[in-house]
Amino acid sequence: MNEFDYQQLDDIIHSRIRLAIIAVLISVEEAEFNFLKEKVNTTDGNLSVHIRKLEEAGYISVSKDFVDRKPKTIYALSNKGKKAFELYVQRLEKLIKK
Image (cartoon, rainbow, N blue to C red; front, side, top):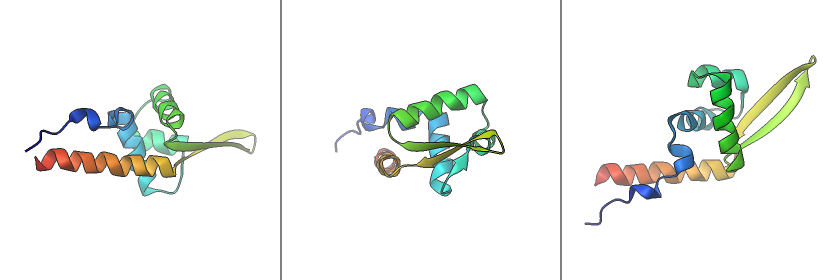
């Protein structure tokens, strides 16, 4: 029996906050910043840092707009992000089944 190689886990997703962000986004079509902040239960700065890392990896898309002169930022899981999450889950399942 081959031993599971934990290094196959996606480091970008494996962070608790980034995993939480992806878990929220996979269950909704899109989400605003404050909605994510509430669901993930983190600070503005902490959420921003993790969102930026997910965006740089191409796992989420970001669109910014203004509504009544107030900024509105919308996040959505990209196809690349969905595939990466599916692979992450498969690899975790492989680890659990060993």
